[in-house]
Image (cartoon, rainbow, N blue to C red; front, side):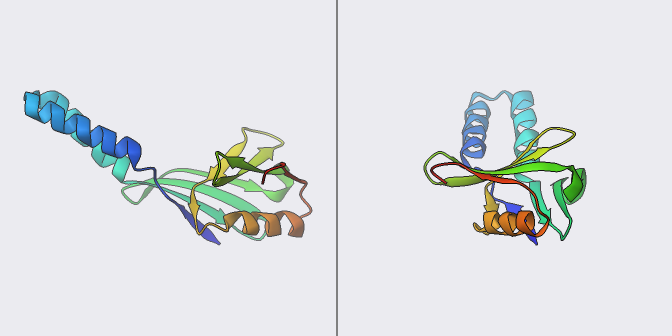
Amino acid sequence: MRFNAVDSKVPLLLLFFIMLVVFIISKWLIFLILAIIFIFFTKIKYQFVINDSSLSFVVSLFGLNISKRRVNKENIKLIEFKRIGWHQKSVFIRLKKGLKWKIFRFQPDNFDEYMENFATANSINMKRHNNY
């Protein structure tokens, strides 16, 4: 199953506002640099893929894969289900080798159910926190 991330719009709106202020002040070089950064930020896409025995995390820019991380079920030590704030669910994947993955803001919202099914199907330890 493939999940796509929902980008946070607040940093982009702030950057756009700063670009407008710089444009009004007539600092063309700074405006050009901020415009390029704005275009890059709007074209970054995140995908999370759950297969039968592996998980993949892909970052792409303008449709080209920049980073692709893949982990097999044997390398997963623990899957934790937590809340970030009041309303946002997240999944932490702790690996035997490497850094932990923090998965949140993916659509559809029931990606955590797919993660739970993946963990039970592959006999991976799960931990649910109190207010999840």
